[in-house]
Amino acid sequence: MCSRLDFLPKWIHLYLEDVLWAMMIFLIIGMLFSRKNTYWVAASAILVTFSIEISQLYQAAWINEIRHTKIDGLILGFGNRQNISKNS
Image (cartoon, rainbow, N blue to C red; front, top):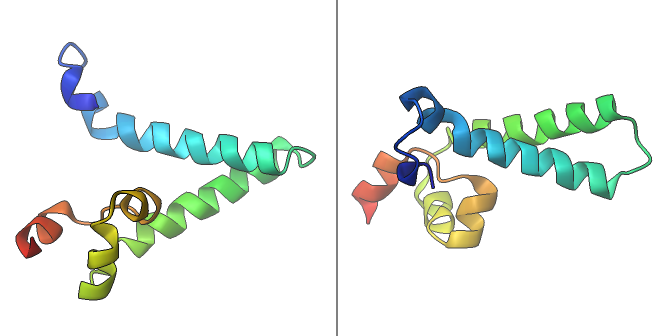
């Protein structure tokens, strides 16, 4: 997505997809738990997004195979894309 936005500064290319993904998680948690206050929703979204980012440090072959599928890659994150592309 970001590769099509050549008119934006390069630092935006680095973080735009992650920011949009984190906002999506925040909105989903906010819709699921609409009676909770904003701070609880924000803390939950941060916990979920950090957990997924940290899980990408684990690069076992079996979880990388799961990450190759589109939906699981979007949920679990693609991890280190260089390592995954070497295994393809």
